[in-house]
Length: 224
Length: 379
Image (cartoon, rainbow over all chains, first blue to last red; front, side, top):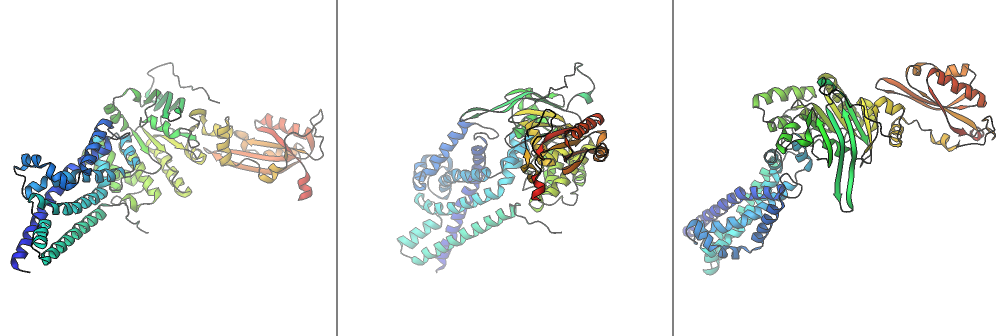
């Protein structure tokens, strides 16, 4: 492979990493609170508010049912408002984040619902406020599940980011399409796919490891 | 039979020691179900005295878990008043209620420990929630773990502990805020018998050492018998019996209490004897059975001071000819309680003498039926 191609590959890798990294971080920053709100406002939970719950749930569902490529084009005005342009890596981060936040929120919600209701009751019996229950019980107990959910989000983002070429976002997917497909350089395509596979593997392995380390539920008992 | 309460003290504002730690007045709890409103608790009034171990026993579905949750308002009663340590819980705002809950420790059947926190941090949790400073937390948690016998487990996670150890952490956690009362919701029901004993011993020790009032919810009479001072029997959301554990045990008034006591003491007749039982044999005007060999069964219940006397020997000396069929002696709150069932072989007159004798020394004797003698031929 020529040095130019390798340089292109590295540049594309960097762009993908930036897109996935930034939108992944935003997905965590907004998705975790959103997931928490979806849980705690539900019926019978610590701050039941069915109006908030149903409205947020509907928004999340709407965002999740919109195909990414359509979402990307549909929100171009919003993207322009936020980053000043609708073209480039920075511009791609807006739709990526917008798609990832509700996705992550649902996964966070699932992880939080796994927390035993008895633990919440125990905290309530100690006089914990809803905020204390969220901070000291729900989130710490759900961390392994939340980390697993964010890992899935990152992996999905790597896939979505390949479509960012449609708005000139660059990245590995864009490189693969332009050089591998349109210029008919299959070795570039193969290189792109290999790099993507390695990336997904690395993210998944790191996420699994972190989740396992956080999970204190399966520690074995000491003998003696 | 619901006994009237006697806690209505005419003099308000007497010594604090006389004030019950928990007073429930007319507690009613109704849940909305698909089939209409379901009443889980129906007009429950009771008082838990300072320093006692108070048992609440009932079959599953009797409402006991809901009742204990009314005490710390995890369940808000539909009607009635809950007064804990002089504070009307039903009148408190959410925020004030959270403060009041610091005074009420709770222990759960399934421990409800946080899996992500170490033993130490689990016990520290209620202190963090109450906003105690780190120095206070450090001073409190260590001694508590020592007290429950887990001084060496501070850095372990709940998953690394046995059931009994987990419940010890649960107890230490419930004591962290130095509560006025400890609520135990089926605290030993998930444990094996041996571990149950050790947890009950721990609770008893805490009660004795700290003078801490304990409310114990259970479906096991053995638990009540082991450590409780007083007990209420709950059935279908109502208090059907209330009294000292000894009284409820030795003279259960309600059918539910009788079945609980029977479960435990096994004073019921063994099946081979019960099979030969004839309810009411034909008798002549003197009460002598007409049927050949249908002998009366005399059940003697030993309680009180006379329980330590050699009753059977005394009765024999009085001329009773008796064949022992079944018997057991139990110790409840350190006091002996025995039941002996004998077949009287020498007729109604001897039986009448025996009953009179028992009555004279203050023991309970009753004819519980008759058995036919054909067992002798069979045996």
